[in-house]
Length: 293
Image (tube, rainbow, N blue to C red; front, side):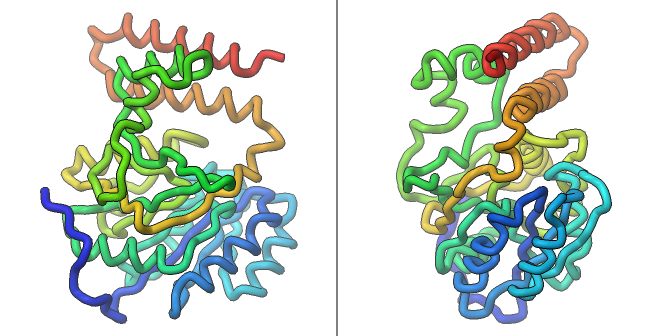
């Protein structure tokens, strides 16, 4: 399908809302909200879903300072579950929703650029910006859907041979450039979603408590006939995983569990059971290797 960058001028009748999730993330929240406010002449409203943070009072104070709304969930629903709750709270008059981590800085014009591309491409359900690391390098945020071949190769070799062909294929590092392009999935750190498509597929699958909920979302959108588009002209900076850095070993294990959940569902046929056993063993060994002292 054709991907267009320039559509009709933005209509003031169509607006984007922003949702984010906090879990002990008060240190990152202020800079994030400030970046949203200064990114556009007419800043979008922001809803913050809180996953039972210990610093909820600080989060509320910061949100009030910037005019954001806090949605207290009363329990930790994980990233996808919290985003689902936040999106449900957004009025239906908002056609698009920017889903973002709180440890992201939105560059000027990024939201309107994403919205322009979304409106010019009615077959698109998710639009992702270029995500920069804090050192200014580009994070591989637009990737192919993992297969058994790339998934196992990446799992086995990514730590000991980072430039292996399976990891490069999975991260689509061969597809460099500045053009808008369709991709398999987009990083949940920051992406613009078409509300109707998101609702139609049930949002994020809450079976993924942490990690791979964005892979699964991109896969299910593709299965439903939608496109995921990468838009490198829209830029955000991901400053770091504040809410997970204090429990990194548990998060590594969660990442491997989620990887297995996604691939085992994708390859669920009965005759692939031996392959799933091998995959489970491979990911378990890799998780042990990554978390050993």
